[in-house]
Length: 339
Ligand code: PMP
Image 1 (cartoon, rainbow, N blue to C red):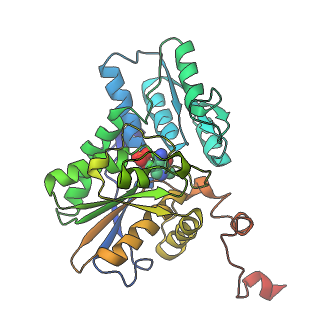
Image 2 (tube, rainbow, N blue to C red):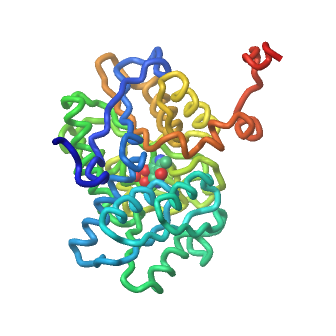
């Protein structure tokens, strides 16, 4: 018989898929790594497993313990699955800009979710970082994995995402692009890939309203770069320990609107029903590729999660129109014709 002992054993080994339409006219081969094929539907399953297994090895988490994390949803899903497999309780703190679907999904797999205000300073006692820390202090036998500063995050990608890409491209990869939130995905993967072939070019995708690009280019942490934005999962107002700027050659910033429109194009033109930051990653990477890729180059772009979590946002026409992200239709729909 061919079976797994638990669903968490299926984490990783996600497929590489070629882009066809949205990359038209760009030289080289553009491949995406489809992370929604993980059992929790996102790249974050990888770090959830690694952070918990490392904490167990170090004696930081004991049987019957509680896992507490500040998460935009995907890490929570991964942690919830690992917690079910291993018998832990989960409590997650989330910013209130996150989609309702993400909150509902976490509750569906048995986690407790505490919703916190988005637009407060990270060290404000109401922020989701501060609330997670307080719960960790007060609940005995609890672990706060802290994906931002826990280097097991970075290592998960160094040990799995990087080697998978190297193997699946038969070492032909020349460019690698990923969105940057905690920084674990881009930094861990890039470190592994650059150790195999030093001249692989890596591109971090940032949002407007985030500090990363300016920090990389000037060394200055500029609070004026920070303002509210809508894209979920990438961009930060802090410098997490998992961002290793030495592994990231360039940053490209992408607007909420360009990301949202590209997300819908990936679904409709490529059959890739992916999340909003996937649109950011693809848009930013393709902008870079237009300028820099040559025939024979191979670019791999990470697509972190699945579209179901964004049905009420980028996949909702009314929501898109309300945000000025969708131009009015110029064609008749089937509904217009039959009425
Ligand atoms: N996209 C989504 C949807 C995410 O949840 C995250 C994680 N915050 C990222 C991209 C960025 O990945 P990383 O944290 O590894 O930089």
